[in-house]
Amino acid sequence: MKYIIAESYKEKIVFKYLDKKNYNLYKQKLVDHPGVKTSRLYFMYESEEYADIVYHYWSGKLFINGELQEEIMNFFGMDDLDAEVVISQWVEDKINKKIEIINVSVMYKTSFAGELLKPDRWE
Image (cartoon, rainbow, N blue to C red; front, side):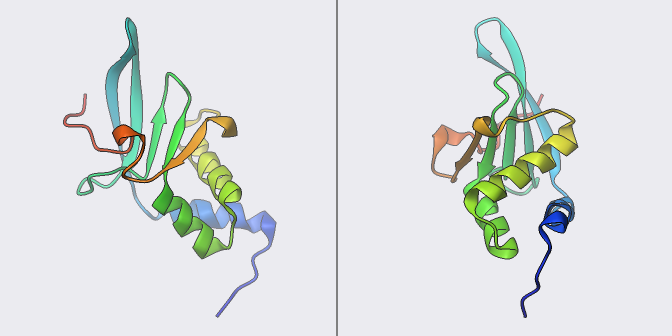
């Protein structure tokens, strides 16, 4: 059965869907550049090896697992950019920080040299 969802409600429904995923939030402190202390925020399940979403505070970059993007696209009938935008807006709401869409990257577990990979330890 298919439902027609008004555009004005789609964002709210996706937000509720992402909220129900009950991600654990992990923060990792690190040094990306000499002398610059920063951190990454991981939205993931404790039992998983890869995060669905990673936010880099220093660069302002948001990394989205391609599988999550496809899940949102397929379930809510969105195109890739719409899915990126609504996931970015959800993260903005959670961390209370503006994310520019130009800083959003979609990747799969095998790409970006482990940006989504769970660190060995948390700080």
